[in-house]
Amino acid sequence: MVQAVRDDAYPLHPVGRVASPLTDTASAPRQGDEGAPTAWLVFHPQVERAVRDLRVGTDMLVLTWLDRARRDVLAVHPRGDANRPETGVFSTRSPHRPNPIGLHRVRVLTVDGLRVEVADLEALDGTPILDVKPVLGAADER
Amino acid sequence: MVQAVRDDAYPLHPVGRVASPLTDTASAPRQGDEGAPTAWLVFHPQVERAVRDLRVGTDMLVLTWLDRARRDVLAVHPRGDANRPETGVFSTRSPHRPNPIGLHRVRVLTVDGLRVEVADLEALDGTPILDVKPVLGAADER
Image 1: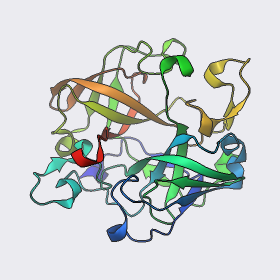
Image 2: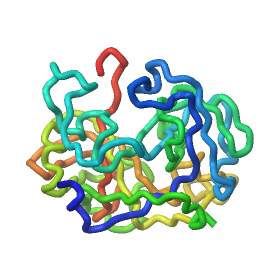
Image 3: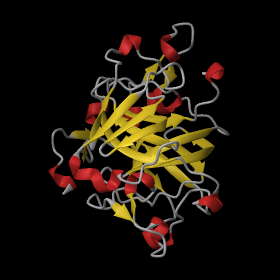
Image 4: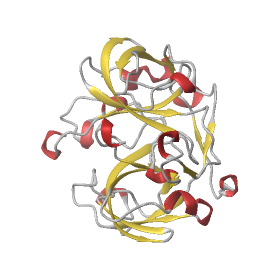
């Protein structure tokens, strides 16, 4: 039972939400570069200073909380294909995992204050946003 | 005040801990490819099924909870350099951010049951592990 792993618990507080036409798991693409529509990251006013240097045209990593995923799944058939052998979730990108954190590489299309439009985000409408990070370039560009 | 963002709180439960010779922030490299020693991921027995398909020689993404980071920092001077302009943390890799989740690309060196040795992990000894994901290859290899 994964739920028994309680030596510590750290509380995540979302910094915003995804606004997207994707509203149900069945119709969402499995990865952002497999046909995701454009979406908006809508940040809370409290994190305005953290957001303000996002720039149009850059690629970023968005971390989300996959709030519709299951946390008690430890192995899956990859991409839901029963012909593929059951595989431990740490070797898959299944949303179902003990800590269902989504990791999405997106491109920034528009920055409008606390609203940021991005391409290639497969997260569902309303998904909590946890963090945004730049993609790391070569070591001498950091 | 980031702490005021409490519309929801999601509890993270670590799935293991990092064992590393790195014990203090000041001496740790800023990124894993900037001189990190080898380290071990030590998983809880409860997640054995999730771990069991990790393979030597593969590159993986490890997500950690940066438990020594500050959550009330929204802007920093990148890499601690006062000559670089203060920048919103969502445009930096600073550990200090509202949800201090570390994202580390590592190479698997050894798999010994619940203990997995990796190269290029700059996390400090004792850092909680949240998740492990494969690096995504091209779309036709998934």
